[in-house]
Image (cartoon, rainbow, N blue to C red; front, side, top):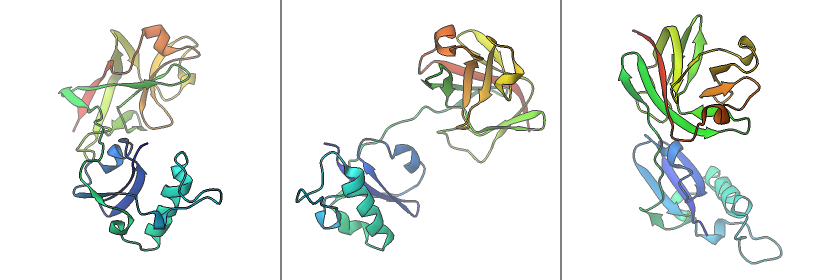
Length: 210
């Protein structure tokens, strides 16, 4: 059973399972203090049992603990302090040249679009500005102009705002609803079309502007 966890970092307190799910939100938050949420005094006991469920921690542990924290209960009251909670690493971006940013495919969604770790991308006039995801220096976005495109598996895909800007069956790269750069094929499966898999490198190319 995954250990329920409470972590204080960056002036905020988070609760969740000790499976690495808090790694991204805690990244770069500085000093962190964690406890195992073992004090049953702050748990919910369902009427048919005398302890929290082993399968419904959201109801019986995390929600009640969050309420007690909001009411002012100190984190240290909720259980023993930990120093060995699970942490996951995330793929980082790298600037290969002044005009090339290298990321990778994170996953393929149910439509076959390849979602990358390149974000936050937004159109500003005829330029696209980006801020790297899972990387430091997020306060220094790069502005791309000229013929910006995405290279992946030896294919070069143009950047567009919407699917409607290309014909059915045409490949493209665009910013999805999550703010992440995606590789897609209009009305087709890009993962199948290009043989994409998580971890495949993705290169955003263009002209860097100061």
